[in-house]
Image (spheres, rainbow, N blue to C red):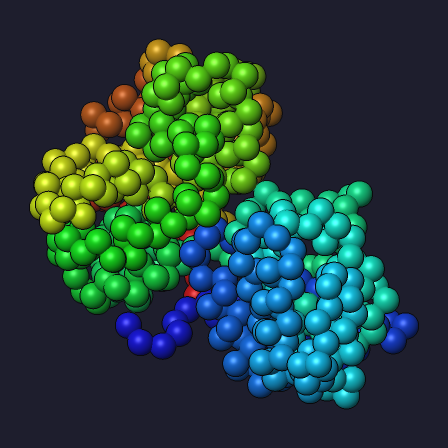
Length: 474
């Protein structure tokens, strides 16, 4: 696919922020700040580049390097400003600021005062990691200088936990910036961009995670295994390298969080099984690693949803693409690099249906949360699942008015994602039996089914993949 596609909503939000700069602000402070976060390789930088090109205003785009010294990034910053379209860019050709305070103050002098401009600080978590005082410095210069100029400051980062925390109470930048989350492209985007039927669009999302770089190399109309047959035999394909680069950027080699993430990615979901798969880590070390992964929003930590509190915690990889990569690609990169991607493809074929059956459940829950009114019972505010220690019962879908302990259960549901296997009366009978064992559910609790192959069974609302795509309007 050529050119920039999608992201209409996100471009509109960025354009709205720039229009507010143009309109000016109170007390002569037209400058605005935006904290943009999103998963690594989700297309944040490409989105901002597209925005500034369309905006047609002077701009600076600086990307931090992640090098372990302040001086290295300062030198790159000076180069970026000198090469930018800011009217005062020549100021940086003659000066070499040695601190971020001096560099950002000089940047303010380089900005136009009679028209809007944009300043992008990409990979901002790297700047904070190498300079503990960067947040405070940015806050001071923004308050004293940047906010007085018609500039939109866009701070971009992939460390979701850190970027979210920047606006917290007690942090230097508290209440100074608008927050923006750039999500992956949706299953509906996969349908439109890849020219796929609804059910196959969900399969594509499970593999690509909605990452634009991967979707861009998927030929329009190609089936899942047509695409995989090419991708897993090419060691340079985005499908293979994106996961490796994302993990290398987040965790040093042999780090405990990385080992724990790989254990979860291999399919282990409970504390004890993750501990064993990660090399029998000490309990305290595993707890710290899980806390780190959760804070970075790399894993999801879930408990059963019902009217009764539970400690049966389960862990899963949050990003669909990384979940697929950790299961089928990461452990076998050496195999692929020696030219035996055919073995990898055969392994995916053999395990795809069973893996997909569980992997699609979080995606279904997310779609159900987003559906317009009328599809689910009223008062449904959260959608989760229910399980016991022995997985008897294990209920795919539970709707409730709140989490983790509900006041009211609004529906119970089942996910059936097999081809040519519609939801039938036997499935309904099993679901109703499980309903009797769900705390807070009774005979009035509505049964719901989500089926890849549809189904018409009296007494249950069956939702199809086409119905789920209505959760992602244009």
